Structures are given as C-alpha cells and as structure tokens.
Image 1 (tube, each protein chain N blue to C red):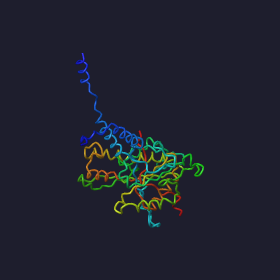
Image 2 (image 1 turned 90 degrees about the vertical axis):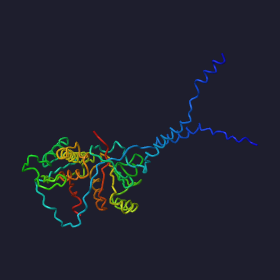
Image 3 (image 1 turned 180 degrees about the horizontal axis):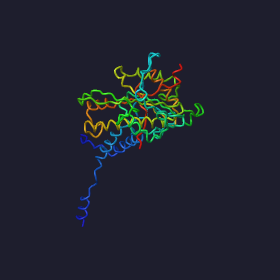
Image 4 (image 1 turned 90 degrees about the horizontal axis):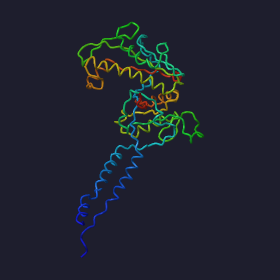
Length: 157
Length: 193
C-alpha cells in the first residue's frame, strides 16, 4: 500500500519555476529596448487621434535629430491662463511665434555640425486648427532655414 | 569547522521583481512610431526683386482651399475625392492635349533613351481659415497622385510592381520622369512686409 502511494508522488514532481525569471526578464528587456519615454508633457490638447489621417506617410528616421512643435488648444487646466485659442508648445512650455526662431537655433546648437542638414522639424498639429497659425510657423521655420519638415499624421484608410 | 556548504539562494522572488519591472515598462511604453508627410519648405528668396521665372499658364495646376474647406481647382470647384485622378490626368497628359502641360524630351540615363517629361507644376494655396485636417488631406492626395504615377512608370519601364521595389538608380530615373513639383504659394500677408 505504502509502496503504491510513494510511487504516485514520484510520478508528478513539482514543476520547476526556475526558468520563469528568465522568461520574464526576456520580455522585460524587450520592453526596455522598445520603450520610448514621453519626454515632454503635453500642455495642448493633442492625442494621437487628433492628428490628421494620411496614406502617403513615411516613418520619421533618426529621432534624435527631430525637433517637435505642437499646436493645439490649451488643456482644460491651462484654459484660464491661456484661453481656448490654439497655441504653440515648444519643449514643455507654451510659446509665441517669435520663440520658434530661437528654439530652432537652440536645437541646432545641441547637435553636431555634420548632423545639422539632416535635422527635421515635426509639426504635430491638431486637425481642427486653422491654417493661419501653421502658415506663420512655416514662415518662421523658413526664416530659421529649417526647411525639412514633417507634417505628423497617422495612417488612415 | 563550520559547514562549508553554501545554502542555495532562494530565487523564487526573482520572478516577482522581474514582473514588477515588466509591468512598469508595459505601462510606460508607447509603441507608436512617428509618421507623417515629409515636405521641404522653399528657402526665403534673398532678392526681393527676383522675378519668378515665367511659367506657362498651361503648366500650372492651381489648387485653392478656402476658409470653408472647399476646393477650387483651376477655377472650378472640385471634390477632394476626385482630386487624385484629376492630378494624375494633368501631370501625365497622355493625349498631349494643348490645354495640359508642355512635354519636353529629356535623356534618361537609366533607360538610355529620351522620354517626354511633363512640365506640370502643382500650385497649392490655402486660406488662413482652412482647417489643418483638410490641408493635409489635399497634400496627401497630391502626393498620392505622384506616387501612383511613379508606380505606373516603375511598371512601364522596369516591370516592377512599385516604385519602392526599384533599385536606387531606377528610382532616380523614375523621379526624373515624374519630378514632384508641388509648390506652395507665398502667403499673402508676408509679401506686404
């Protein structure tokens, strides 16, 4: 009797969970590598679904060479200070049109000289924004001779 | 003598630690890749007196977008749905119509022969009240028209399915056959300065 019971216990050993950490670590490293931390806190109303849709889109290469300009209505908690009209956000602060020139120069100063011709400005603009402000931004960029731009859009249709 | 045997470290909690980190990264991760329509702005002309070179009227395809987001193409209202087709017809000028762009012969090296190249230019102008969404939609249609033409050319001359399948040299040839000429008019308010 006892022999029988003993044998049964031997037949089903506890599953080793020693490799579980390895598996989890593997997934962890995957996420660590692919992760992109949001470097700026958005102060304008601009989620991914607020970007216009397009089919002829290209991936932005070399993220380190990209400067971002955000345009949209100020978020609810900034409405009292900044109103409800679309505003420009550079880095993590609201900015005026005239600040763009300085911003581009500052961005340029941070990069290696050889990389400057490859710098791109990404315009992340809410799709309901009027073109007036966008046209003004484009003129400022031309003044700063930051001519490579990218209209941020998500894949559509 | 003390026992030399080192007790095994319990690695059971290792998984918990790893899980904790994993969950942190899962939550903070944003997988989205930045995509968009790449464009090149024209440099500011240095000489104000510089006269823009004379462009034959039939070579220009004027696209206007007004503050109500409506389109006016070469003086006629148009739906954005047919803009792509119209642009293609204009650029291609397959029947050599005298109303559509002039075609000039140019030697294409990769093909080793002369090809008639359309001189058409697309001029895009928008109002300050146009919404950005519509502007991008129109830009997208215009770029799409060029992409389709280039894909056609890739098939016609090289027998490949799309422009992206071509080699670097062949792509250059196709770009020469269908150069992307989308010009954005100077905004009016700047000219006054």
